[in-house]
Length: 111
Image (cartoon, rainbow, N blue to C red; front, side, top):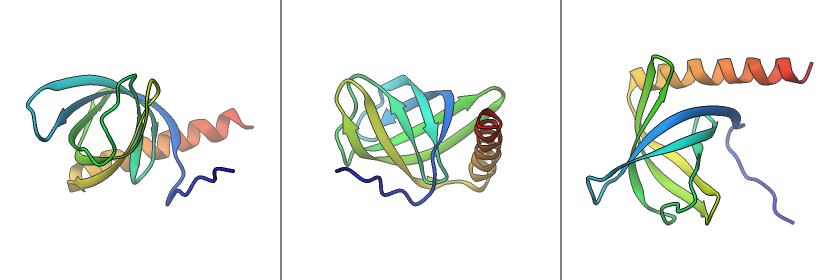
């Protein structure tokens, strides 16, 4: 039986992600579906292989989160789990705001 091993909970979160592989300059637009303090899940039918280093920009409403990230795992035809590696102080603050808002929404949906 598979057991998830997460350092922090993920919350549903829908946003646009601009992703560039470190080895190329091609920018791809994908969709974020879940977010945590340590990473996110990207919906993508053709995910990058595990271990790939990416430049990530997540855009939601008027806020932008920038980071480098590593593909932790990939599910063909579904998506990939990313772990954040380098996050600026400003992007860290944006991430905390988004997580708090997502947590509040999830708690409201369960009450």
